[in-house]
Image 1: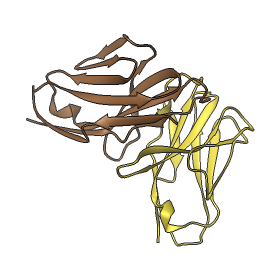
Image 2 (image 1 turned 30 degrees about the vertical axis):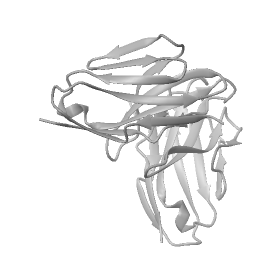
Image 3 (image 1 turned 120 degrees about the horizontal axis):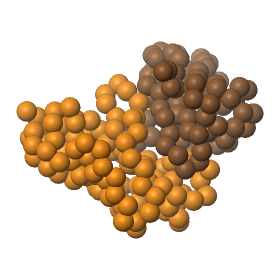
Image 4 (image 1 turned 135 degrees about the vertical axis):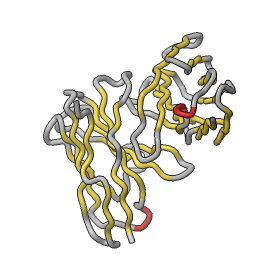
Length: 111
Length: 112
């Protein structure tokens, strides 16, 4: 059974204080790993897809990396507008598009 | 540019009542999904569809039914609501199985 574990559950950062979020996963075969951002009262917003170990994607202050067992979302010099819950999800090779989500990491960035 | 639209945004039901949640997408996506989100548990898949006229069970399908009569719409029904179905429901759509899913802003459902 596919499993996704995100850590930490919550993270409080000062503006400019870089940090990393972890997503560890267990799947029989990885078709893709997805990162989403979710603001309160809103649906998840797509950030990145990673398909193979060693792949990296960047967008503004965010960088996602992938190994065979985990993914990291690095937040460099965060700003208050980066405050959100970050969700990780994996897709198995035989899942017909189904995603298995982690519980998320809630990030708060204070000025 | 609407994307994925969910109706209604909020609803309060009494135990035993029925209702239908509507999801509409304007991106011509083949795949559509219904999830529920509960505190500390992440998003869990209820039902999904890989094309018009098709539906399949997800991780937590009990107590729910779905229909996809038109490609752009995916309906989620609760025949006899229970307090355990109090949750936030999200609909998503995607073009292919390994492409990102696009989410609506959710329906907040309370069952008393």
